[in-house]
Image (tube, rainbow, N blue to C red):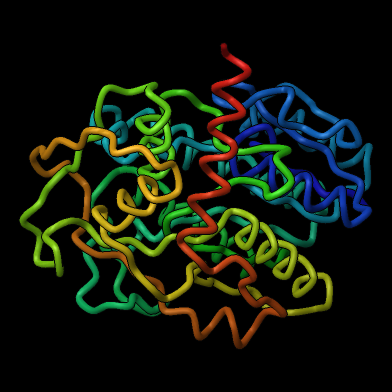
Length: 328
């Protein structure tokens, strides 16, 4: 059978494609290359340049190639951008996802794995955040993902479709083998931005808010290595193919690090004391987001292998150096 990966030329999606190809799966990638890169797709996967929301075209691909599972990464992911362009986010993340789910139903696809986000929780009342916590997103990005989760739940109730929605916390790091990583130059991920500052590609790094109710006043996040994350997707696929029920699961380590702690880790790994400026709060940023992980550990055959901030930073920095040398 064949796995269709949307957004498979992007950061997390390309890691997933490598993971699937390494496991011997037949993989089709659908990506419009708006933020992805051809070079990120391994040669043994077939890249189709197009939009995941092109329902009729996707149905045709499913019929022609025996697709039994969809792993859906394609979408817009920058919280501040979603506040500036909410309708764009609802179109790209929600309308296109609705078309993809409809294509899966029409194409007889049985299994669907969705790239969701911890942003659906908004500002959780308690930490860590459990999957049954109230959903109260504070950005159009979070709302767009919550709406897609709802569509998946209802479609699965009405059709022969099972799904796993994985709520990512902060994804970071890069492929330990150096094959792929976060390649978008203007990506807003903290570890990437800090690595760029360490390499002299940015004059400084901004800390957005230093007076939050956290141990050092800066935001706290649960960072998960991208390799562990895609392995969670593989475990979710095995769960569904084995007849498992639909699930919604957090993807994190259950431990948070502050912005200052992350910056210190990047300085430690790089040996560079780059400039750091303090700035005001950024809209859409909750003070703390840490995953409750009991459900994923109990329901999937998955255990983290790279649960270490210094390891995450080392891999991210190695990838950033590779990009820096490529551009030189």
